[in-house]
Length: 230
Length: 219
Image 1 (cartoon, rainbow over the protein chains, first blue to last red):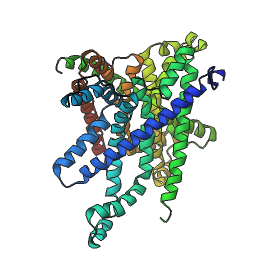
Image 2 (image 1 turned 135 degrees about the vertical axis):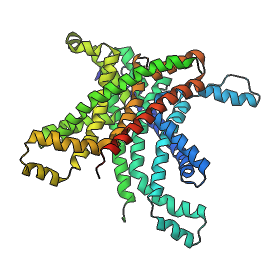
Image 3 (image 1 turned 90 degrees about the horizontal axis):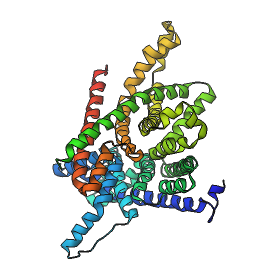
Image 4 (image 1 turned 30 degrees about the horizontal axis):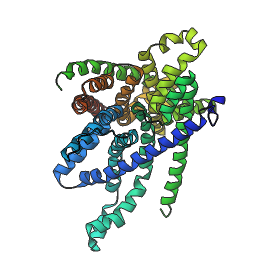
């Protein structure tokens, strides 16, 4: 237990901050994912064929390709792409993208592919009558989507959003390959310097279990809250 | 882009091998824990419950690292026969994938077992079939058919999961792709080639499951 002491003698404080980092990346990623999902779900639901195709392409690629490969794409390709754009604007220097941003974006894009399907499914499971009634009442499309469809959709999507969150949380462990110091990376460092990998990786597993347990409790509360009246 | 193709295809063989072996062993682990889960014995039930809870609640990466880096540290494991399995990254990866997919499949099989109509089981009892026959001739075939769509997803997840073998020095498709990217600095091109190979395999699995579903659909 001395290994987990808080302060200079143990790894307690380091692992604590690494856990916060995991939570931060996962939160950033899931919100990036929601943003993308809002766009691509509307593509998939649109009547325009090209948009359907773009939406399907996005979800097929990022749900079918391993997360690690996507992370490598952004890790090795990210700064190249940014520098390419910067060169167009006349900046020639070297730009390095922060590991946090690389991680949040790559996991966010993957998480977004799952969220897209969740959002699409939820909108489709809303009773057609709701759409028809909104139209009859003379709401403009934008208004009734924001005021009527999306609030109902979010309630229906909540159990699946909880699943996507669990996937996203676990996927953040893969960002450790880029050197971002989250739970996995910190355990790797600690295991290397103390020569006790079994202890630190098992402790990492406990931390992840704790996080998934906590988020499950939170989502159960939310589900209860939003299904009152049903 | 083209030059990298032969090396990537070569690595694909390892990816396929890892996927198939893990899925094969994983089915047995999955059925085993699904049966434990439906048992009336509380201890068996909780063993299976916590097994799947822990394996599904932690990232696969942690599981591989515990098995590959962690277990090798324990003295008595290194002296026992287990060391034959645990000293090679290849068998460690398969062990980790098997245990992981076993946990997910046990949930899939369990819910399939639970949806079996009570009437079917009563009919089996009425016909005088013993427990073992009822399990192998009636429960298992129905459960397998029930769980096909969900198991198809699990197969795809496992295919993607094998990419983590590259973190324990194995040169699977992702491992080789990473190596080529870091030596040529052409991330987009390599991603397109390697990604297409993965998508092709996903597509094959998807259609294979669809085919099986049609074949065993007797409604």
